[in-house]
Image (tube, rainbow, N blue to C red; front, side):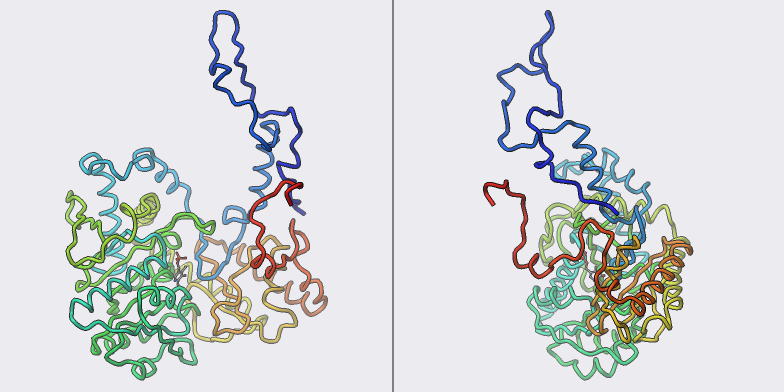
Length: 481
Ligand SMILES: *Cc1c(COP(=O)(O)O)cnc(C)c1O
C-alpha cells in the first residue's frame, strides 16, 4: 500500500538547507553573490535538505495514476499512450522558444507547421478549411456555434434554436447556450442512434443547427447521419458534428463526406497530447465552404508561404490569443506524419477492436443496455448488481486500474463507460476483464468489501459533498487554523 508523504512544512527542521552558498570567498576570489544581495530568511518556509525535497516530490509523483503507469480506460476521454518522440519534437527550442510576436519572416517554419497540420486535418476529415485557434473541445464547440450564428445572420436568417440529442456529450448544450442559442433536447431511438423522423418532428424554421456527437456517447456510430444532414440542409439548418471521438473514425470515414458543416476535433485526445491534468489542449474547428469567410483570426492561408491574415472582415474575430496552443499542434503533426495514412486507419480499427473485445469479454457479466455494435467505447449499466457503479470503480483502484467513466451518459442507469484505446495490449485487456469479473464476484460473496473500497490507496473514500462545499485549498500553519 502506498502511503501519503507528510507535508514539507511538517518535515521541516530549523537549520536544514537545500543549498550551500558561501558569500565568504577564498583569498583572491570573489563571491558568486555578495552578502548584501542575499535574503536572510523567508518566513514560514520549510527547511529541508535537497535530497529530502527531491524524494518528497518524486514519491508524490508516484502516487499519481497515469497512462505511463497503468491502464486508464476513462470513457470519452481517449486516454491513449502518446509516443514520447512527439514530446521530443515539441520541445525542440525552435518550437518551444518561439515568441508569438516574432516577425513572420523569422518563423516561417512554424507557420508552415500550422499550415501543414491544417492540410492533414482537412485530408482526414474532408472539411474544407480549419482553424487551429480554439484551446480545447468545448472551446471548439463554442467557436463552431459562433460560426454558424455569423453565417446565418449574414444570410439574413438568424435562428434561435439548436437541437441536441440526449446521447450528446455534456459540453454540447453548454456551448450552444453560451453562444446565445436556446437548446432543445431530442431523444435518441431505442438502439441508441438519432432517428430521422424524430429529427423531423423537431425541425422548424427557427432551428439553426443540430449538434451531433458522432460516434455518440454510447460509442455508437450515427448511421442515419447522411439523411440527417439532408433533412437539416433542406430546412436551411446546419449540422455540427462533435468529432472529439475521431479516434474511432480516422482513415475510415470523413465527416465532410457526410454533409457535416462544422466539426471540432480534440488534438489532446486523438492526436497525441497527454491530457487529464488540465494542461493545454487544442480543439481545431473544420468547416464546409460556406463557413470559410467567418473563421476566427488569425487565418493561416492554405497557400504555402503565405503570411497569417489578421483582418477577416466578416469573421467572428479572435477566440484565443495568438495562434492557439502551438506545442499541441506540433505533437499532432509529428504524430500524423509518423503514422501516415495506413497506420492512422489501423489505430482507429484497433481502438474499435479493443472496445469490442471488452464488450464481448464482459457480456453476461455486466448488463449491456444497448446491444448495437459499438465503436471505440462500450457502456454497461449497474442493472442486477448488488453494489453501485461507484463501488466497482473504487474497487478497481485497489487493483491498480484507473476507473472508467461513471454515471455518464445519463441515459444509461449507473453507466460504466469504458474506452480502452488502441494502445493497449491483449494482455492488458484480458487482465482488465478478469479483474472486473473478480470484482463482480466479490460483489456477490463479500459486498461490504466492495462498498468500502478502496482499501489500498493512501486515502480511502473522500467525503465528496464536504469537499465540494467546504474545499480546503491551501495548508494553514497550525496557529492560524
Ligand atoms: C472530451 C469531449 C469534449 C470536450 O472536450 P474538452 O477538451 O474537454 O473541452 C466534447 N465532446 C466529446 C465527445 C468529448 O469526448
